[in-house]
Length: 381
Image (cartoon, rainbow, N blue to C red):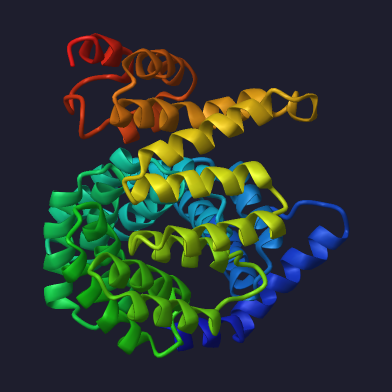
């Protein structure tokens, strides 16, 4: 197919089309051309990586031939390829209005929806694809991602397993399946998947860094401290300037999991010394203590952040800081049995940050409960 397209772009027929188009455009006018010709021009520009020119030719086709379907499809392709996800969703929906059984459009729509964190919608799109093509592996993986991102971890695990049974050497799927299993605290299974993913990747996968980092965590959670530190050390080889990994925080997390609090605190202190955003680093440290079930220490760190935010230096950021920490504060006070403080911060969290509040309390309050109803349930705990 690619060779046929390349041959066409070198043919006299197409060279005549592109010459007529560019000569007219360069003269400051819009050429009147058939829809097929304009889409061929746009397709040619796409193969050259000239997305702006491709979009201009497609817009002209839409203007001259508003009832033609091909320009709509081309615009959807342009938006998708240039990662303009919101716009891609709009155009892909127009494509599907015209051709509701277009599998590639459904797949692209689900991918764009996942990028925009529209997970329920992405699940629907993946399901539509599977209704048309039950054996479509891309759609099966999209379904697993969408379920996992909606905290439907058990269902996601089943779908990941279906995919991995058919594609056992897909290291990216193994990584995401393992990440999902961690939410179910099935750390041995997750670690086995990550071990295989790392072997398959051999440093070539773009996710190799994350595979090593996640394996460090699972090794620690199954009691292998040295293996956890070794995996962390291996990940250094795959770090890059654009990925900020704070190894002091990660090492501190490992030592804390093994109840070596003094060593952990030394690494946390080093992380704070080097941090360019002390509040963010303190929040991360608090989350580490929460992960290690030390809610008393986490509570004191969050309280310290709240007090720091009251200073004049943080006046402009104070609201955002409180928005970020109040769900965690409510959860910590719940875990430490401080009822008055729990109810106070829960009320704040519901008003300021219902999304994170739902994440923290999803295992405490009924699944069907809305965050605005949490106080009702909390008063009966």
